[in-house]
Length: 157
Image 1 (cartoon, helix red, strand yellow):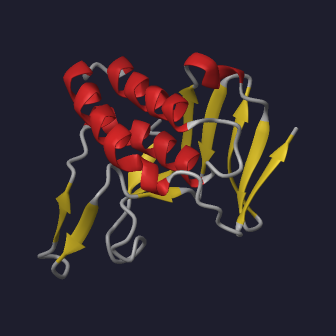
Image 2 (cartoon, rainbow, N blue to C red; image 1 turned 90 degrees about the horizontal axis):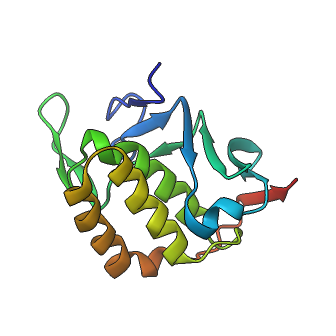
């Protein structure tokens, strides 16, 4: 079973989102593996959880893959441009995205989340890509870290 699916850019994603979670399970690594169990909500919608050292991402969570990325043109003639997604980076980018989104409410630091991102790509067999993508999130991810969105809620269990 696939754990994500590519969204149609106009019917489902409105050209903003590219992937939708079906059910994703990612092992947390390093000190992140000892994060307390919790549930993740956007408004009243349950989108994920951290349980026993694993991150679970549930439908209807959506993300845009590796960023920055934009959809240009009009379907069926449009296309995505920006940071490329590879088979090894899609799930890792979803895990990284949700942890960054909830970063103001979780008990992680940015280095822990970036290490998980690197490890997820590396474990998928793409060590060279992992190093490049990790360097990019280390360099540019700080401006997105710790932003408090009032619609997000974390319930520690």
